[in-house]
Image (cartoon, rainbow, N blue to C red):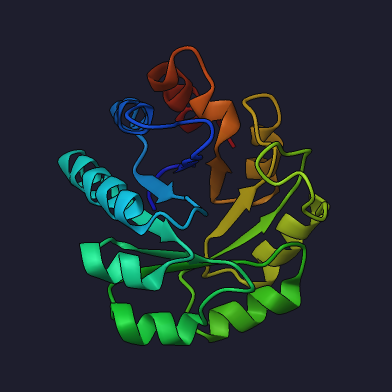
Length: 205
């Protein structure tokens, strides 16, 4: 977790082989953390895609996290998982994946949820949405002040922010104390994904 960009894939935005081309492009741009997010029930395709994405990430010395599927992460040897509030418990995930795994937890707009996640061995906490989001349109909005509050309370835990993040609004989230910007649509819908990734990484705070 050593730069500002955290890329999140989207099945509808990146169908078929577009997924691999797009993730390769973002890795070429310098992204070091990718989350494979696919809510479908097609286990065979998800296994195939996750294996190939892991190989791509390893090629670029980047890390791959699996969204909400601890068993898939374990099966392919992914670098970790990202868990929602209705998914596996971080403690159970830690037992299965081991101490070296990265475990992130969605905390919406709640410092209380973040505190529990950290207690349960999360490596990072994720807040959002901060802006209107096409990926999660129904997510409850979070105030930007939440980031600075979380930074004060959880000084040793990286804060990831998500939800409608663009090059135009990302800097204010970094200025507020975010460690990483989790981006899907604004990144993968760009005409030049590699250039877009570089621009996110170069945002100053």
